Image (cartoon, rainbow, N blue to C red; front, top):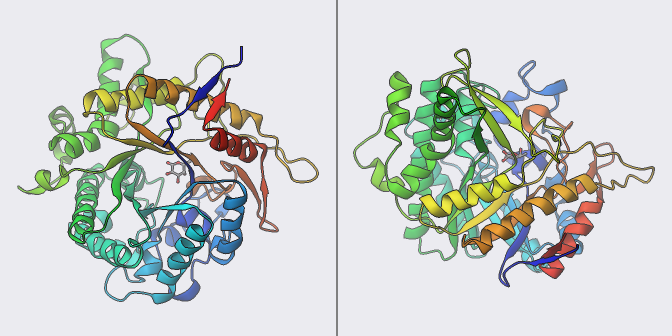
Amino acid sequence: MNHTYRFPEEFVWGASTSAYQIEGAHQADGKGESIWDRFVRWDDHVLKGYTGNIACDHYNRMEQDVSLFKKLGLPYYSFSISWSRILPEGRGKTNKKGLDFYDRLVDSLLEAGIHPKATLYHWDFPQLLQDLGGWTNRDSTEWFAEYAGVVFNKLADRVKFWATINEPWVVAFLGYAYGVHAPGICDYSQAYQSAHHLLLAHSRAVQVFREGGYNGKIGLILNLNGLRPASEKEADIRATQRVHDETHALFLDPLFKGEYPQALFDFIGPHKPKIRSNDMKLIHQPVDYLGLNYYNTDLVAYDIHSGLNKARIIPYSSPSWGRTEMNWGIYPMGIKSEVLYIKDVYGNPDIYITENGCAMPDNPDESGFVADWDRINYIKSHLHALYEAIQEGANLKGYFAWSIFDNFEWERGYGQCFGLVRVNYDTQERIPKQSAYWYQNVITNNSINM
Ligand code: FCB
C-alpha cells in the first residue's frame, strides 16, 4: 500500500558537489597546483588516466548551472572551495580572481533563492604545502586556520552554513595509509598523525569562525559506513570493533567527548599520533551540527593478512538489493543505524546527511535522458530509513543528495555516475535524469511515497 512519509516542516533539502570533482579550470586565473592536480598525472593512480582538468567545466559554466539548480527546485546547494584557487601557495598571497569566483557563485545562488552551504576542504590540498609534509606537518593546522579566515572574511556575510573538512578518515587513510587518493602515501603513522591534525585544523577553523563573530552554523563532515561482523566469531567481532574505532570513534570521540579511543591506540602501538597537552580541549569545542555521509554497509572479517586492522571488508546488501556500480553494498537501514548511533552515544547533536546517493549503470536513451529508477529507489529507501530515525528521536535536520552532477569520481574517474543530472562530457550538456525530477517532487511535497 502506498503511504506518504512527511518530513518535519523545517527540514532542509539540498544536493552536494565538490570543487575538484566539477570545476575543471585547473590552471585558470592564477590557481595554484593542488595535490589532485599532481596525483592525476601519476601513472596508474587514476583509472584510464582521467583527470579533473576540465571535469564539468563548472568554473566556466557556473551561472548556467545555478539557473539549472533553480529550475530543479533546489533549496540548498553544497559546494566546496578550492584552497589553491584562493591561496595559490597555500598561505600568504591571496588570489583575487579565485575569491571572486566563489563570491559570484554565492551571489548567483542567493539571487536564485538558493541557500549556499560551503565546505572549506574537500581533499584538494595545496601542493606547495604538501611539499612541506601536508597534513602530517603540525603547521597544517595553522595554514588551514589562515585559509579559513580568508574565506570567512570574504563569504561569511552571506554564507550561513559551513563545513570545515569533508571526511577526515578518507583524507588521512585513503591519502596517507592506503595511497589510493592524493597524496598517495602508504604509511599508517602518517595517516594517524594526519587524522589528529585534521581534527585540530577543523577546530582551529571553528575557533576562527567564532572569534570572527560570524553568525551561522559550522560543523565537521564524517563518512560513516555501516559495519557488521561477518560472523558471530569472537575474532570477527573484534576486527569489526577495530574498523569501527578507526572510522568512527577516532573522530567522534575527540569531537564529542574530548578523548581518543584508548583501545585503538593500544592496538596500533607505534602508529599512535603525537598529541600535545591542549589539543584535546581544542578538538572538543562544540560544533553546531555533525555532517554525515552515508553510502553503504560492510561486513568485517578477521584476516591476519589484511592491513593494520587485520580486517577484511566485504560489501553487504540487504537481500532485496544488489550492489552499486562502485561495488558498494546497498543497505538502507544502515543509514538509520548510523544516525541513531550518533544520537544515542554522542548526545543527540543536530545531524545533516551531507552526502548520500549511488553510482548506477545509467543508460541514456537516444535523446540522452536517463530513466534512473534504480537511483530513485535507492534514495527513496534511504529517506524512508531517515524518516524512521526522526520518528525515533534523532535530531536529523536535513538531507543533501550526492551529487547534483555526474562528476570526477576520484581514482575511478568518470566511469561512475552519481548525478541527478547527467553530464555529457563531450559537449558539457547537462541533462536532468528522472531522479532530478523525482527529487524535485520530494522537495516540493516535503515527503516521499512508498
Ligand atoms: C564521498 C566523497 C565524494 C564522492 C562520494 C561518492 O566519500 O566525499 O566526493 O566521491 O564519496
